[in-house]
Length: 135
Length: 130
Image (tube, rainbow over all chains, first blue to last red; front, top):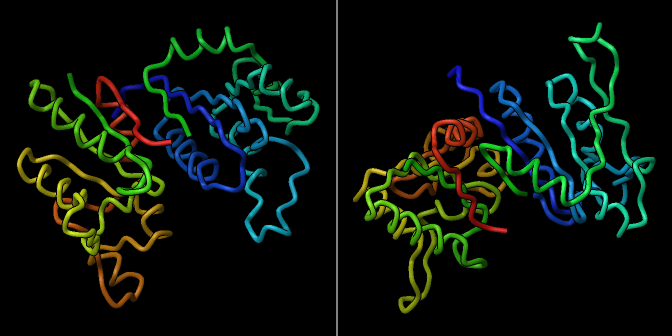
């Protein structure tokens, strides 16, 4: 299967309370294994999925947020955060995990995967995709 | 047009499965092709033949099975989501030492790669459910 399509995963929900975030991450990892052109969007309460300092001890649920750090190794390095969603929740990019990748076209320089974009810019990003999956 | 379908909710709490069933029927009758229907999250609950709603309620599981048989549609239940929720076929029963299985006719259990393949092979992937 050599065909490559642009897949966008739209993550809209808080990491815990429902299983959508975790089962979305499972699909993202599989899509990367299929060597597709993968982008992620975090919007609404979905921005909490990549908040740093998560502690789920009291929940009895695995803290799966460290898994996002591995995305760069799977060539998943286009991660878009909606600015309006951060603002509405009093968050800034400093409250998020520092997700990076090594750019093989630039002597493996470490670069940020996270891009904070406006909802207007997100419209254009979504418009460029072949497949949009929302979770 | 070739459609891939993803269903994320079970048969009765949300309308997603009913809407998807109607969409699939209408698409086929309009001459379109359904590459695959993929059941994810609680959507895997559409694939248990143990579903027994009251007689005056619709049986969505049977409706999917009948539609699959009539039009030869590929109904795939995600294995990871299914294992969490107790949806089991004979192979999974034997692998996990369970005392029975409940997969409905016309459904099969397979991996998430089947969803990605549906995204690649279909002209449109349509997602139903919250």
